[in-house]
Length: 165
Image (cartoon, rainbow, N blue to C red; front, side, top):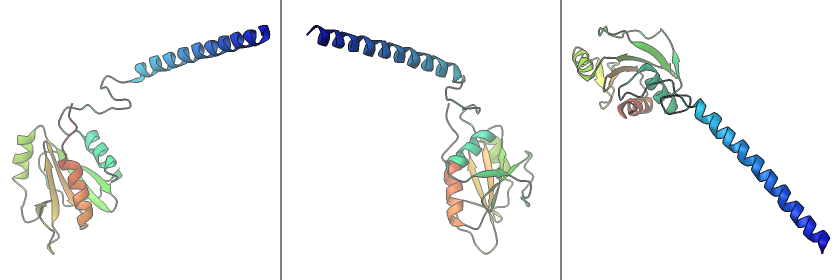
């Protein structure tokens, strides 16, 4: 009986010692992870969430939509709108996007576009080889693609709106 009691007490002591060590390990891991979180509030986030589009936010949105953007300089026929466009490839389609200071500046620039050549994503493509115009907040994107499914995916990703703060 004394041996059983001693064995039970030893087992409880070992379990308690192990549990205490795990608690300290978890606490130090939590403390370490708190230090690693940047000021923006999300781990690994370098893009500020201002409620307006920035280049990194637009790229992240396209990546999240599974479109795998990659840099290029090969997109031709992009209009001069007073802001230099950023050009990327999405599969075999080209996308040039302009980021303006605000919605009003984007709207004024978009009003200068030829409505026969640059059509909104809501209109179907015709034989005239139009380019798709996608607008949201301070972003204006021109998509060079004949694929209706790709047009819809890109438009959905951008028109969903910029990440909110």
